[in-house]
Image (cartoon, rainbow, N blue to C red; front, side, top):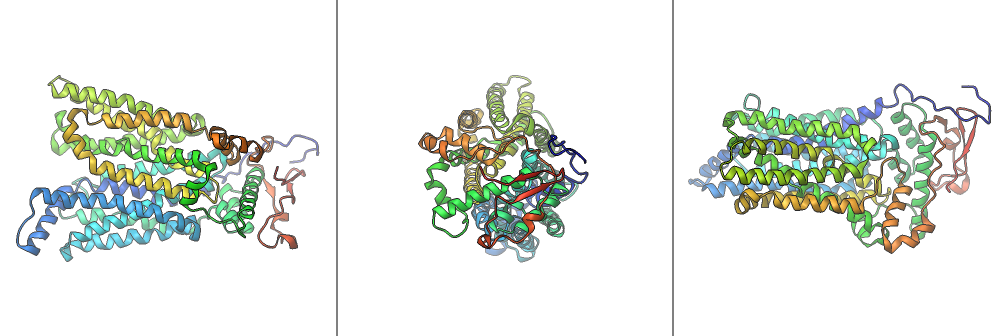
Amino acid sequence: MNSSGDSEPEETSPPSGSTKILALTVCSAAIGGTFQYGYNISIINSPTSYIQSFINETYMERWGKSLDSPQVTLVWTLIVSFFSLGGLVGALLAGPLAVHFGRKKSLLLNNVFLFAGTVLVLTCRAAKSFEMVIIARFLVGMNSGVSMNIQPMYFGESAPKHLRGAVAFSSAVFTAFGIFLGQVVGLTELLGSQPLWPYLLASNALPGLIQLLTLPWFPESPRYLLIDRGDREACLQALGRLRGGEPPVLEIEELLQEQEQQQQQSTSSKSGSAVAKSPWTLFKDPDLRSQLRTVMGASSAMMLCGNDSIYFYAYYIFLAAGIPPEKIQYITIGTGASELIASILSNLLIERVGRRYLLVGGYSLMSCWSVVFTVALILQSHGVAGMAYLSMVCVFAYILSFGLGPAGVTGILPAEIFDQASRPAAYMVAGSFMWISLFLVGMLFPFIVKNLGSYCFLPFLVVCLVSAVFLGLTLPETKGKTLAEITADFQGMNKSTKEKSKGQVEKPIETHYKLGAACSFTNLMQDPEPDHKNGDINLNVPVEIEMNQTVPFVAT
């Protein structure tokens, strides 16, 4: 470690435990977070007939007559759709929860909705009430809505810049893992039988319990601690634990610059401290319209592209291919496995290929497979041999293409392109558009199939094509960039603020600072000067580097 004062600092290897705490934090947060979304949309499929029988039997005992088949289907549609409505409510709650309680505590509190739904679904048969199942699915939807927004925010704020995409993309990996595991647990040999379906729906409590027991031991988001709460010491401790040593110089400098920007914005708006923005404020801010438009389009496209619908359509495709009905449940597991494999592959590629190429490439591939799928369905309806097997190939290829890009990159975008004050509101907007789109697709897809027949995937083809073109034109690459650089790219695209951005965007942080270089923050840990007692950080405090060099923290 001895070197001359004018020598170039060597790039120190990261500590052996540099990613251990971060990886464990990801697993603990995700197992009770986005994993629950995938698991809960998956486990509802196998007990469909059993729940419909329970609805009819309950109604007969209560009123002395049975429901007609369309009426049973209507109640079943309510059970399915209330999950989406609960997700919408959860998405709207996520922003205030993340601001007032923090990212980690919000994920822990979110389990209250889950456990309440578990109690309802376990007691619904004893109470002879199918309404309890509807309420339970609504509460589970709220749990998923909160976690789908806060978890990517938590990951994006906790990961280092060079791992930010991979860590945030792990949300999609756990979603796909939840879908796959839900399909496995829903097999008739396990919990997918008539006597056990309430326990199948209640099995989501186990991941929530694991999160409650493990997540309290891991750090809160360093960005939240410094910028929202103004707690320097807690921020440095959390950052040190997540990095497996002393906090990196470059990362602290980036945090300080972002905090200074927030304080300047608060001063210009005559507020005493950095205040989280509301969704309405985002819509009124012309400097954020490009970012907001991109996030709304990406979130809507993620659900309108028809990937979830193809899961439901897979049963009929496999049946037409000659697979025995009792074996289809095993083949269907392959669809969940396909998305899981694709999401893992994309997690490995995202820091090499970039976000923009994965998104545009994913939707482009889905467009191609939509065309092939439509042709196969048309030829299959005319009795052409082998088309059912081509349709099966299209199902797996469509899901693989979705998992490669849109499934994971979409959730990362608000964390990367919005600042700390705007991020919770941005996730509220993105989540709202996502859940509304999911609700619309779930309600309209049966009518699309009924009226369009073999052409039922043409609307999804249009969505995928438009999404690929739109995101290709509006989304700059965010891989490895600071928030200032990403903001500059967006403002360069936004004609209304192009001239304004030339004088306001900060100069990017110098690249010769080594990411991950260890430093000692004894000076920062000391009490601030009297004129900085209100939580402001003196950006001119020098920081002692391990290699006996001094790097001043100066906001350029």
